[in-house]
Length: 415
Length: 167
Image (cartoon, rainbow over all chains, first blue to last red):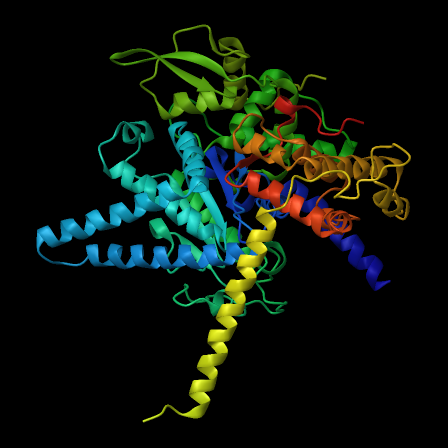
């Protein structure tokens, strides 16, 4: 009887949550424009790395725009260990010089120390073909104005640190590549997991288990800073021991979302500007629309412009005092993705012509109408002077969607 | 003055251990480098019934309590795995960005589309363990992974790549 009541309670709770979940977890953040990259550890074959990436995708609820792996698998197993020690030795040395370069001293000494750090960073890059490949990917994403969060496990930390430091060095130098990066601060953060390195580049964060039997054997590794209730064999595996750990799992996810916010500074939301509307009527409409599903077992379908309006509504930020967390979002996120997939399924990246003040004809690549609108919202100086903003988005459809957000109450939903 | 006996012994012990580890690493390295490209003979790739699955794996698949769709997913995954074992150079394709995903990636993706990641009935590594039963197969697998090292492994995109399962 108790178990039946418990099940009934859980079912009721699930129904209730479906309708009224107003949780920060459901709110979109910077990750909608970010790539989550997994840098794998030692002895991980492709299958292991893919499992880790897929697990991250599940746990972060598929909220990042991209999930990739910066893969490394060097040499034979025993030589991998030697490689780790070599990377560790070089990384320590570079970190030492980098630390000295922050200290006060005669300018000429400081300059020569900084030069030494630069040389060492470049040496890493030149010597390691895998690192060069990873850096090329990060550059590609940064150039496309995507921010990056690297989740680095074990040996992957050497690669992540090396890549970030190389990009920083390059950005500091006045090279053509630097111009391409097009950002004052690198939009890249590292979340280290079981790091054998003695630091996390770019002021990143990390978690290492107290019971990690591998990292604890490595001299000068970052000190352990978390423990789970249950410990396993060596406690070093990414999924089993870290991501599925009762304490370490939620902590790592928290660090990932924090890192995402830091690199994007709220870029996932539409800001004030292009879509200024009161959200209260739309919020009420969404609540009723979702409720309708519970009673009738079927949700009424949406027109193309209504689909766009709920997608836009989902991505709106803190406007007129109604924060994301206060809106009905749990079902909305899923539903908006569903209808968006159906209605806006053009896989090709489109280009649209944006005339910035003083800069005529800047061509920008867009993957979706939402991305196009987001661009307009971020760049209010950008004039929309053509009929179509995106292959599938016309002015008419957009105006209908905006008008729906403004006044959805009392409007019938098309069958 | 002579050092204490225990300290001298432990130093010798660590020296010996160091030599042994380095020696083993060298032997492993030289051995793995001198391996000829894998052949169907060296991998025991026997497929008497010609169904595209090696005979030892046929037996394994038969022993699993799975439905028809799941069986197809296992077979497709095994076949994709066999292909990279027979030709580890496939690893360069993704590494050099000539393709977005190779045959192994497709087999893996299809497998989890059918089985799902959460509470999956059979995990991919169980099949991997079953396939990599001989040292030659392990070497071929390592070589494929070495060739893939440095690659960017993108998530599967249905819009670009279509359904990963051909059935």
